[in-house]
Image (cartoon, rainbow, N blue to C red; front, side):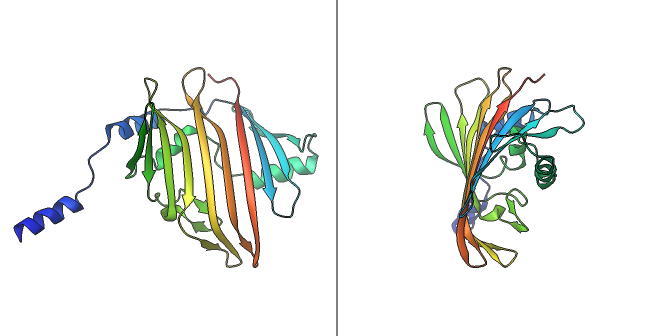
Length: 223
């Protein structure tokens, strides 16, 4: 009985801390790129609709901060400027520091190659992946590739994958989504997003379709 009890305690005990994961998390928390302006180019493709490309500028320190630069290769109309900014109001500004919200969670090393280590998070903390009013965080698997070639390891790529379908607002169902975010150091060493891709497949009122979104970030001068 004592042997069984001891074994149960070993199984229940939390995994030992991972020094590399701790170093990466510390680097994430220490990264502040709020002063970095950037161009964001986003292309949206929906089933049955014409693709749309929107270029926006984020200029920190200005009154408006966000402005729409181009819509499908032309200058935006006043209505487009207003509607696009209204639709994105409240959305978080892309940044490496946002990874601190979940990178410290329990993870498993699933791959190690020269210069890279991949961590898998079997589920994410509440509030990390929210679509509509549905919180899909617990049912999202995240694979984070850490670049270890430099003095400060950093997350180079994250891939989020849904582990099961879910419904949104009763009339919509998401069968599967996959999202990828990539990061790279700026000239001053601070890590900054370079792109995000997402693919959502599901149905609305019983009609199947997909939404594909591609965003790229071109950083401007920082501090």
